[in-house]
Amino acid sequence: MNAIEKRPSYFLIVLVFAQFAGTTLWLSGNAIAGQIEAELGVKLGGWLTSTVQLGFIIGTLLNAILAVPERVLSTRLFLICAVFGAISNLSMTFLPLNPFFVLSSRFLTGLFLAGIYPIGMKIAADWYGKDLGRAMGYLVGALVLGKSFPYLLKGISFEIPWKEFLFWISLVSLIGGLLLWSLSPDKALPLQRNQFSIKALTAIFRLPELRAAAFGYFGHMWELYTFWAFLPAIWKIYAHFHQEYVINIPLTTFVTIVVGFLGCWGGGILSLKFGSGKVALIQLLISGICCLILPFCVDFSLFAFSTLMGIWGITVVGDSPQFSTLVSRFALPERRGSIITLVTSIGFAITIVSIQLMDFVLGKFPENLTVFWLLSFGSLIGLWASGKRIYKQ
Image (cartoon, rainbow, N blue to C red; front, side):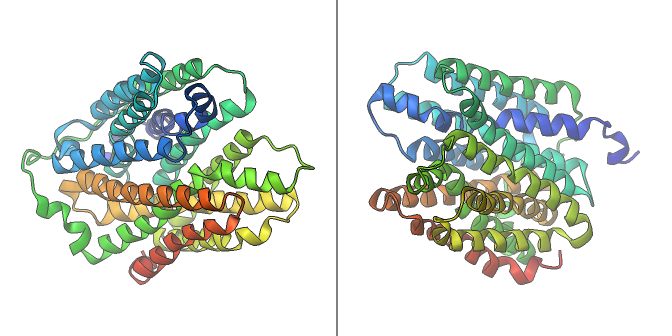
C-alpha cells in the first residue's frame, strides 16, 4: 500500500487547520501593540515582530543542526511546540508588564513556532507527491489566515481586553496541535536519524536547482514579512491623505493579509498545469511591480487603492508555497525536514534585516510611501537568482 492510500481522507483538512491555529500566535503581539505600548508608555515599533522572527530563526537553526525533524515524530513535535508556543504567548498576561518580559514572550513564541510552520510543510512533503504544490498552497494559505486572524479580532472588537485576546489566541493554537497529533498519521523516522551531517545541510548551496529555489525564497522573504508588519503604516499614510474616508486600520490590514490565501490556493491549482516555478516567478514579479507603483497611488480613490493593495496582498505570499514546494522537491529525501527548516531559518533571518531597515527609514520619512521601494529589492534578487533554473519546474 503506498503513501497516498494510507493517507486519511480528512488529512489535509486537519493539517491545514492545525497550521492555521498554530500560526495565529505569530502576529498576536502586533494586533495588541497599541494597548501594550499605551500601558508601558514605550514604543516597541518593529521589535514586536523582529523578536518573534529572531526566536523563530534560533529555533529553526537548532532544529536543523540537531536534526530534530529526523529524530522526533512530526505530529508529536508539532504538538509539543503548539503547547509551549501557547504558554509563551500567554506568559505576557501573568509576568510583570515591562518591555523585557513583553519581548521575551514574543521571542519564546517565535522559538516554538519553529516546530509548527516548517514541520507542517515537512508533513505535507512526506505525504504528497506530484500534487505537493496544491497541498502547499493550502498549507501556506492556512499560515496567511492564521497571521491575519488576530487583526480580524481587533478589527471587529476594539474593546476586547488584550489579556483575554491572548488567551483565546493561545487556546486556538493548542486545539490545532491536539487535533493534528490525535488524528493524523506519521511517517516512520529515517533509520540514520541520529547521524548529524553538516554536509547534508550545505546541499542548499551545492545543488543548483535547490540553490535556485532557496534563493528565490530568500528574495520573497525580504519583501513578505516587512510588508505584513508595516501594512498598518501603509494604511495610516493613505488615511492621512484621505480624511474623507473612515478607515478601520485593523480590518483593512486583515483583509490585505487574508486575500493572500487566494494567491496560495490559486497558485497551488495553477501549479498542477503550469509548474511551481512559473507560478512562483510570475507572482514574485507582480508583487515587485505593486511595490514600485505604490508611491504613485496615494491619490487614488479608496476602491482603486484597495484594489492595488489586494493584488499585492495576493501575490506577495502566493509565491511562497511554490518556492517551498521546489525546496522540498530538490532536498535530499533523508534530510528533507532539516533542509526545509534551515532554508526557512535563513529566510526569516533576512526578514529581521528588512523589518529593522524599514522601521528606521520609515521613522525618518513617516509619511512617504517611497520608502517601501526597499521591498522591491527582494523581488529583483529573487528573480535574478532563481529565474532560469526553476522556470520550467
